[in-house]
Amino acid sequence: MSTINLSAYFTKFSTNTTGNASVDVYAKVSKIMQSQNTIAPKLNAALTADKTVLSGLGQLQSALASFQGVAQSLSGNGLNLSASSSAANVLSAATSNSSVTGTYAIQVNQLAQGHVLQSNKIASPDLAIGSAVSSKIVFEFGTTSGNTFTKNAAITPAKTVVIPSGSNTLQGIASAINEANIGVSAKVISSGTGYALELNSPTGASSSMRINVSGDSALQNLLTYNPAGVKNLNQTAASQDATLTINGTAISSPSNTLTKALPGTTLNLTSKGTSELVVAQGSTQVAKNVTDLVNAYNTLNTKLSSLQQGELKADGSALRTQSQLKGILASSALGSNSTTAQALTKIGVTSEKNGSLTIDASKLQEAISSDPASVAKLFTNSGSGIADHLVSQIQGMLSPVSELSKKVATVNQDITTLNTKKTSLEKALTTQANALVKLYSQQNTQGSSTGTSSQSSNIGNSLFNFLV
Image 1: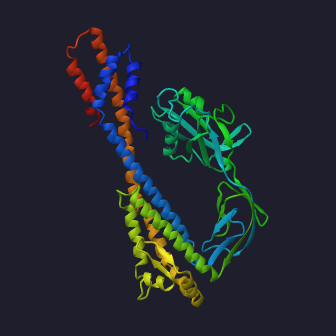
Image 2 (image 1 turned 60 degrees about the horizontal axis):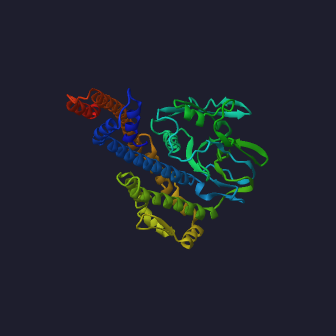
Image 3 (image 1 turned 135 degrees about the vertical axis):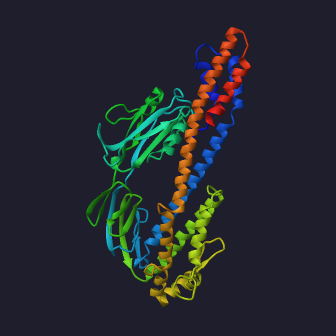
């Protein structure tokens, strides 16, 4: 959210009200409104705090989901499976317990990409464009063929982004689009000769953008884009699907991550080229998959520690999550007298004070060579293995009724409430500034101050009364 700039209101109302407001009137109005400038900073501080927490909670959910995917892929026979690409720069793959072993010849002909549009350049990212009136940007998505645009029925209705009054800069527009979370990312880029707004749609041929702007005419001239009409933005990349062949069979995908091209195996495409993918099963894969699980756990643990010092420093979600996961590794839910930690230590996996795990590779390989079935059973065992418990725990954390999900909903609601208060504040500022300008202009015209003091005091207090 852009901050509330009271000086912008002073300038606006001192020049746009009936009659000519003098410098003296401007100074008086400015002084009174500055004395009222206590609510705006508090609103902005509260919004910033909420958005920081919301960002941290989102990162926490994402980190948990990523680790859950790794752990879940090792259930059943998954610990014995691995996928190896002969060209890691072309693609990588992740197996699951339903992967099918085999060798696959893969030719990646084209990567999926989104629609990329750039505005014409202006001198500064913070330069005001047009007037400060509120505007709306409406995004539609579909396929483009020549000058024909066909809407994507799967992405309806159109996505609307409101550009608040006073946010009519490249940076303000980019922030509004990103905060709207409609799938379009926006950023301000510099070419050395000026600054431009760059818009990126989701990947896929059906994600081409059609953009309509209402409100400020200058923003319309800057951002309107219709493949069949006015194109005020410059296209730098067309949207397209990924295309590839697997053992000679042609496949297309709107994403570079393919989950259905091979049974149980996820493909991640990174560049054009050829690769031979081998999905294999056997005890030799156990060490690699245990290492992958430990590395994924350490990545999650590092993220949790970082969130505790950063976005979630004032919130206990990351700390509670870390404690719960540590508890699983220290539990005695293995159906024996040994704890999880003791069982892990026997195969060379130990826990450090910071919560991370380390592997003694030679000790792990020795345990696998001696009894690979027991090592595999330690991690996945009909719901009672380490990976099984971790997956179950995270599923609970990410469920719609979990404490984490409820907290996200609460913070979102608080942001909505604060934004409503911000809108009310802007209206109150408008009313107050206009009333003050009118009052002092009349005073100058009439040359009398009778009753002015009490009237200005009442008007000055109206902002507080309006918001209470």
